[in-house]
Image (tube, rainbow, N blue to C red; front, side):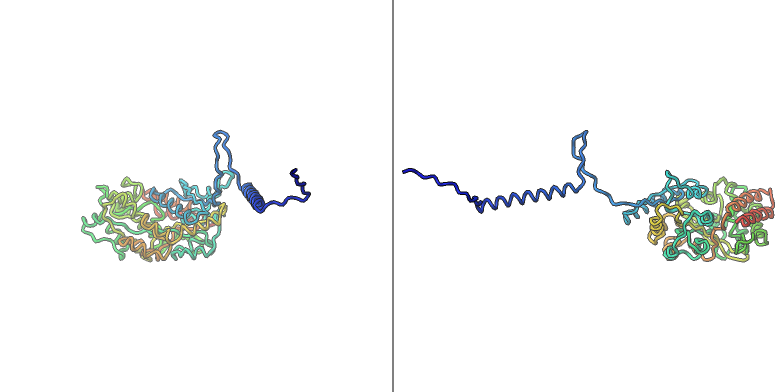
Length: 448
């Protein structure tokens, strides 16, 4: 028997069910691989370091941040450290902002120039910290941007500061802190002389007679420091019923009788050896003379509290309101505020920074550090609780006059300070001080 070979079939041979499953699996794997490859090609590729032949991963993109700079003056190390911490807190709360602190030496003389600068290599600040005295000049020079009135309302400013923060009814600065002048007295010196401490009922004569009783010029100690400083004489001018200019800034008023009586009283304290200048007792300023117990009384602001804690921690002293004058009971209040430069690179971020710096929690954080009065009205009770023995600084706020004279008045301040030195030495009479000051002021007003 011959075995017969079967003839080949012309019909295609169908795959088995197993082969179909196998082929489907391979196709699925290929499709998946293709999708994976396409996805990978759409992502940033890692880079190779040719030198080390190691894989360097592509950095993860960081969120975009807006730099925002704050220009201010140098302060004590503890205050500058605290300010750094405040800015760091802002960045934690708002990661889209990158705050930076700029500190300018000789700030008062340089701030206008810094704000006017804007070159390709110098970035203008986004926010500037100002003394209220400088505000009118900077606005007149076109260096500050007007602010939304709502910002001022949100800041809840002390009423006495409100007008000083605005020019022609438009706010240009949001307040941060304030300080008033009061009378500091050395309790040990008073006790040794068996004299009662100053009170709110004191007048000019009480100040003079007590200072005379405490003065011992032959031993290098005086009853009072009377600095050649316009801002320290200014309360006496106001208390005598005088003013620097008319209310509408149309004319000077420094040659009127009220100014003459105020200056005569002030200068006679020196000429009668009842009071002294800081230089007379080998001091740079009144606070130093008081800390070194070379004087029984001084007229200074609440910045004295941390200064004495650091420089005279055992000194037993008290604080009373300034003595009343013949016409008024007033003091001078100094204010600081935050403004937006007209050429701020990031004005929106600058506004956010101003809102943060003038917020209640940030202002509260400063109270225990520098003893300055928060400019936010609602925080007054917190300051009173922190400094119950120094409420004389706070009690004078409602009757205070702001240390701010108007546009272009810095030359007047310098003129009066210079002439006070001369009149103390007997080189010129008090009338000349006022006549020269009035002349300088009139030139300023005519120039405006």
